[in-house]
Image (cartoon, rainbow, N blue to C red; front, side, top):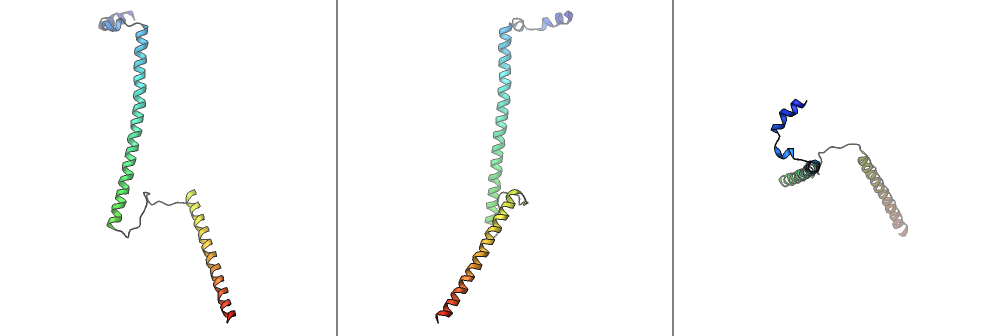
Length: 127
């Protein structure tokens, strides 16, 4: 083992031979801090780039939708979704709400017809 060390020692620069424990700790802290900060900065920049790409994609889709509507004004205006439809929680809630509104409208129409019939009868009674 000492033979290997004796062969390596001539190739080590003089500046590395003079490093004491304080310089080694300081160098380790600096290099470790650099690596840590670099990783955090890379993650932040990757997230920022992803957000910018998402923003550009939504703007592009919105612009395409506007252009399609300008080309064919009778076309159905669709949102930014891909047209998928399913029976998720939100869809079931919307369907129940629509059924409730429809039922209220039916009741209103039936009550309105009953009132109209009463008015017809009143007209007949007045004569």
